[in-house]
Length: 431
Image 1 (cartoon, one colour):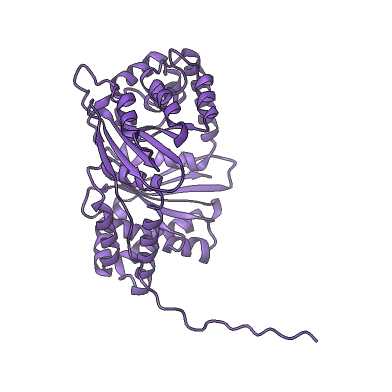
Image 2 (cartoon, rainbow, N blue to C red):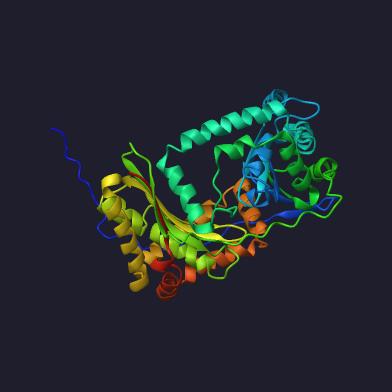
């Protein structure tokens, strides 16, 4: 006869202990002869490094739509010595690859390379940066690919909600709110990209973050290759000034027939990470919809079954910020979902957060902060984000302290200050 196995279950949960924030954020600074600041984050155990070149060359600075994105994406697609295919094959031969990313304020070119081959890959990285020629045939391919992608996106409720929401809160003429049209893509010409590259991919606009287990003598190589990046002979163009011109219509509906889903966006333009309230507001945002156990997830996903996922995000931009709640729900449940979102917002404004919930959010955020600083690449990325706002590593220690010490009464104040329903915009795309 088989012996029965007795199972013993814990009846009392172990005591909750607040996570201690303890992370190494060490970096060194190197100034090249042309004034470029190189931030060196040397740690880790793997013989690999990441070299990220950042430029003040995001869409904020572009003379026409999509110029910044097209320029940055096509920089590795041809020099006077090598074609796009030859460049790609060269990096692949050495087990390396180059990524480009363009955001609202900055553009980045990033090389991942093995330490033993960095002396082979650095010269090619410098070549594609300083000798990019933007071949006409590559621009033609880019235009075709971009138009195909736009055609696909225009059939997605998620995309329509995002672009309409951004335009709604920032305005049609604002770089943070501009939407792309097919005719904008048709206007992209090689010479337009070359001119943007000449003006903005220069030493005075550049900063570099290098991370990984950095080999001895690496600094000399950086000076040799990137100390040659020239500056503008004339003063750099001043960034254009734009004012936020939000739509007078705070609720918008974008029809896309033959869809069973509706995409929701609710939020507003708000503060960025230089504002003293930003860290506290980020705690409030996390509680509302910033993690899987948030109030919005518990209500709309777990309790009501309206959606697979809903989130809220506090986005920081150089010239502004944005609070946005985003989800996709069945068309028949859209109105009820919106009501529940506002219900959770009102709760945060009317009722103090219970201590148990606040401690749970504190632990989640401190843990996430620690995980976000795990490894040299992650540390470099965080430090780069702080550098772009004129902040240093002390920002993260202050952030951890805010998470640990913020009170329910302070969260109540922030909710009433920043979550006024009359200030929120709403975009729905679907049927």
